[in-house]
Amino acid sequence: MKNLHKRIFILCFFIGSISIFAQTNALSIQGVFDLDVPTGGSDGKAIHLVATADIADLSIFGLGVANNGGGTDGMEYSLDAVPASNGDDILIARSVEAMSAYFADCYTEFEIIMVANSSISQNGDDAIELFEGEMVIETFGDIDTDGTGEAWEYMDSWAFKVRRSMDLWRC
Image 1 (tube, helix red, strand yellow):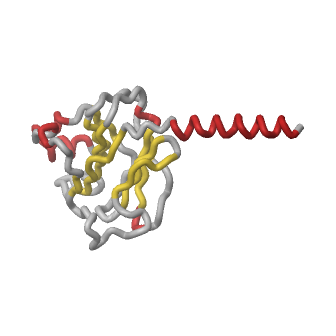
Image 2 (image 1 turned 135 degrees about the horizontal axis):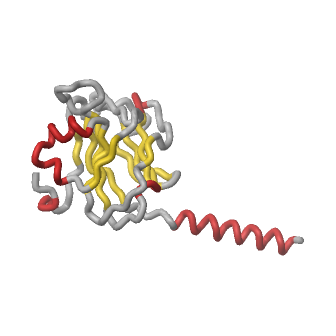
């Protein structure tokens, strides 16, 4: 009986190890937006992600917004079940029309565009979490801090991660 328990423990450890090592970290937060757009409301809220490797199914990733420094609410938005290629720019926007108008000719730089649900509700002082499965793989801001007055605040504006090679983004 003792050997059976040991084997079950080893099997559970091995299975758990597989799920831990299965994380790809193949997606990254590139930018967060709380834009002041003419249509107002939540139309200026969006998140820009970039694929850092080929991804067969983006639905293994999701986003969470930690509103007002209240900590994590977990994954609140799951990406669509579509593939992405290494280097693809992905825009998740509350209003596709408002983002298209704002970015104008640069809007075509996004290879994948998704319509966000009401959970993408950041107010320029809220942290953003990127999930792969149930695990947070990247965070913008501090989930336990209201970002008002913080260096990472993006109220009525946007924050953008500088890429190593700016020739990837021409607009």
